[in-house]
Image (tube, rainbow, N blue to C red; front, side):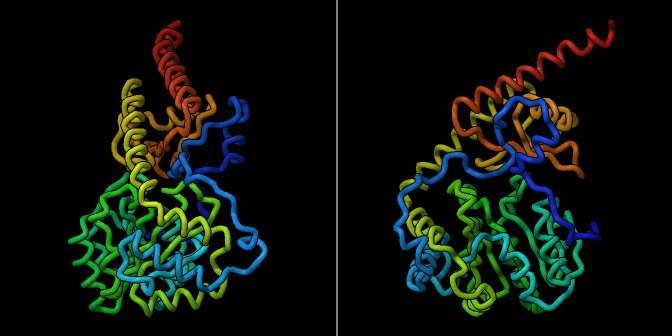
Length: 351
């Protein structure tokens, strides 16, 4: 068990081009940003009605969004859905559903969960053993996990949820990447049992992170508590418009899952050509864990290709998908440059 002191401190994340410029000031620009797990093929943009910007959001639109989200994610009904301006804003509110106690986060994983639990007053620790979560008041895990793509089977999650529920605890499952995961392992359809909150992110799969839209799926009383905390007009007009249209577009979603799977296979093959092993991930990102990861991060960054590294785990990287052929070529060129320098390195050392 790893106790997380100072867990309220701000956390570094991928996607910061300002930080990339500071780390690699002489790299060719623009950066190819592969440091996030956001779909580079975003849902098609469309013209918004003027009222999406000029009027406060209508309650009827929010109800429509909740109904569509329930169908898209497999929740029992719209009453089991709380919509928010991104899942990030939900994290401390969900953690506050319980009085301060013992929060355990299955890690390594997305660091904001521990920070949110600490903000809510919990004593927070990270555990690597799934079974240890049963000792928590608040148990949190990401499924599929970020950054390694690990998936915990639904049957094990339901057993854990039952144990926590029996003592008044809560299981929080962040399914931010379940849109490209094994959906049969989702707990969205089981939130009515109580003691379970499932988080779903809109921006990652639909490639519209700036829209700021996310959902908590829970039993109706818990969903209502979250709605009350968020207050009226929590979801902006443009986010309502995009959420309603994109979550209803099953054909686009099916095509995109196929496209992402093909891209992930292409990325695996490209990395393999340059002897970079892939250890896991999802079809939105690949997970690398090998001794030369820190060197690869620096080599790619110097060539203007940004991937996600982790200060506390220098042997680990997460690599997102290039969004177009130019970005694929930039990545291939950066990998080729690194390979050539490694080949020449022993000769230079011996001179």
